[in-house]
Length: 103
Image (cartoon, rainbow, N blue to C red; front, top):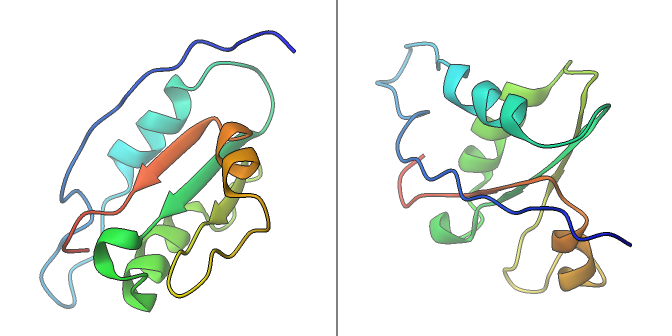
């Protein structure tokens, strides 16, 4: 299998909004548009910095609901990984979104 070029797209706090204010997914959608390749983009959210917080998972998941061009997954690590082979799952992704301490 050919090695795909890897890039880091670092960001923080783009989904943090006061209660009741709608989140703006534009930066996350832009990150997806930068991923190499055609067709579906494989996006994995890793919410470990928030202790796999359900609200953090919900905030990011709602950005990708309805996006037919995104195969979205969440990798939780507390108390056990949510996938059988963490390395294989991560290496198969086009984009890794690593949660910040406050989503």
